Image (tube, rainbow, N blue to C red):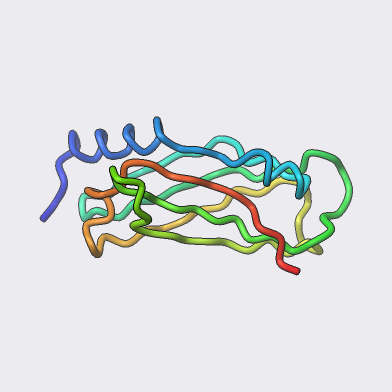
Amino acid sequence: MELTAEERDQIRTQIAQNTEVLDAINQALNLKIASVGYSVSKNGWVEAMCDVIAIKTGPLRHDIYIKFNLYDKNNNLVAAEEDYIDKKDFGGYTTLTFNFFSGNDVAQRARSARVFAVADH
């Protein structure tokens, strides 16, 4: 079933208004996650994007996973994606994209999101 433009806009707005960036965790890893945005396709794919910025100049101490979780209206996890930042390749700024496929009606069920960084020890 294809989503209408109005349905896609409602889903995108709902998730965007209820996105929590876990700054305390990110700051401990010398990172800021900014400019979180979303798009929703006719087929129900949700694409999430964010900028990852170093707070202080210099190399990262650890390789990093950026985790992006989507939750339903009861705060149950409905989808999770992650992307990897290699400390040797990170130049202080990058934009990451996360794709949540349309299975299990992810777009229709998602109501909020959390974004955070995790060190890979």
